Length: 223
Image (cartoon, rainbow, N blue to C red; front, side, top):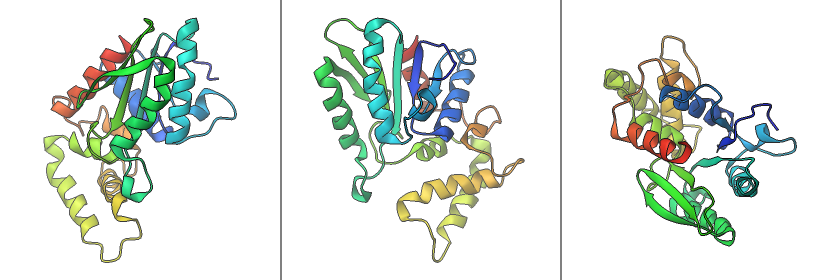
């Protein structure tokens, strides 16, 4: 397990997600390392990355809520696309609910401000966010484009047009937003940075409803 001693755990799919959400948490007032943020592979030896592993670790950590080793627990995963072999939003929520049900957790809220599961026996509530917005299919990149700063509108539009204008793209159609995000980041002052670079560089609108919804869910989950 990571040396980080925090009893607050936010489980994500991979390294890029981890650095983004760690920066996001810091930007909304949490101290650095106040919340342990990372994929399963960073939590314990022998664990992997990816959506399925993240969900499995999240469910396993309910046991640590019982004995007090974990005080707050959250999960952020992509909805993906059901038509492309993923679960989609509904399938992801059903999958997570099915794993939590036998542990006496059931959803008490399900909306664009995130999902909260409550325990029948009084354990702490736990939070789930399914990117991009707990409604639609997609990825973290869809969420990020949705909170782009107004000052970035022209450059982002050009990046999206450049991707659309590719005659024979090598990437599958459902990865288009990922390509748009990579293109936008490639045109920044320091080209090619990861998603975490969006935080603190005036590239996102911290007053947008989508940003504020994720902030509210994080506070609900970890405060």
